[in-house]
Image (cartoon, one colour):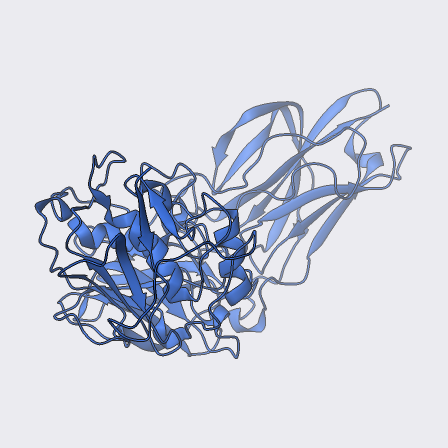
Length: 490
């Protein structure tokens, strides 16, 4: 068996480190440092001498602007991110689960190409001439002030993107391991984890971090915080970029970070500062120095981890148009969840789907559930509409249902057959100032009693139809739907 080694971080190039042996533990181990928000950046100095290190010239729409070793290393660093990159994690055939598996308060900021190898805290990847026995690569620290990753030139490096690299060494897999050291992880005692200290084969298996690696990065940076800003899509119109998401700052203190459009870069990204938001969207003119890569949103908070959003891919040569009226996300898919599946016939507050289609102000949309029992006039259907997204709402009843649903405004109509509309209810304050509301807003409810819902002896299907203000995640059709709810009346 041909084992190749990955050595522990050193203080400087040439410092004695020795070959690794597995830690005397059956789990992850920590080096005792972490990267603060000013050290989330990384760059690549492309001095790789092997043709196979840069023979992938096929662009990837999920990681735009780069090919070759830059693309491979970008994917490696992205794998440690807080959530699936671009919402889907697409971009690597070896990872059906998707890129972005860390689930921690950490996201790496792609800053393109460097113009030199840099020092031991320059946050760069580069090749190093020579060899050191069976060592493939190493990471130099101190971690808190930055790092540098070197790949020995004695090995033949391959940029993929396929999973078969022959007898070459996989840049992406080895970079994923070494970047784990930059984050503050020591070697793991769990065989098969990315942070295991040696590689059998090419290193492709190291591309995808495993449960022990995930537990380690979460131990350092914490599990992704609920208040961490989150990007869910981007769109453009009239020369302006709009970033859609949640947890943006409601005062003019949002910063947007971009990958630069020229080599160089530093720990200070190209950025636009002091942007206003209602909490779920930001609109700005793209700065002159910005290039294709990733875009981030930074908010003010005392928690270093939850101040920076996930990265979202942006191709400045092919910006997406505003989404259409049948969905609320930039990739063109229906929002999730947007269910037509029906709950149990015995009503309960927790029965059935949790929410309907995302509306302009709330990813959870409107929730239809029930309280009470099936005796006359004791059951009540309760509609909770998240955010100040509705002015008026009415309840629909049908004697049938459509499991697939029919597009209706920004939602999906699940009720079918003979339809009856109940009277409209004021479900919100029409025209209320946006700044007067918090996210998510306190529940706004409307209820209809059993006596008016349905004569006994039939199964009926219910759904809320409501007005959706023309702001927020998408370009709304001004109406939306809740989930469906089924009642079998005795």
